[in-house]
Length: 150
Figure 1 (cartoon, one colour):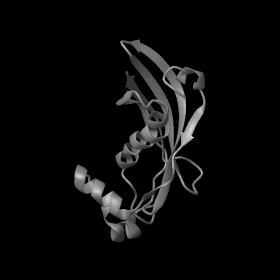
Figure 2 (tube, rainbow, N blue to C red; figure 1 turned 180 degrees about the horizontal axis):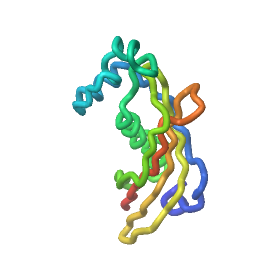
Figure 3 (tube, rainbow, N blue to C red; figure 1 turned 90 degrees about the vertical axis):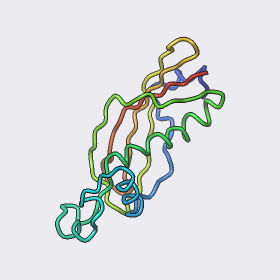
């Protein structure tokens, strides 16, 4: 896949990332960096007692943050080496299922739109399903936008 032929892959799955661990250390670091220290994320003892999940869960935005590096690794680095790719936004995000501490997730990416914006710019839209290993439904589904600039 190259920037010249990327449109021929519309509607296709373009890759599935390796699984990444979402352990308590990672959740705590995200909480420290964002100030989102809600007990359901950072207090394992309380979460064991009071959470409907029986443990802490990852922040939705922590999970969302995994889409950029996995998409860059799977789609843009191998295919568009001579291009700068910028995160252009998110059209839609739905947080479908919680991700318990200790889980592993992976990003399943589908190419859903390619639009020439002129001046060497191409807007690329992907659909991302962040799957939780061993679970029947994804943690989140998001349409992300990427601007490839020559």
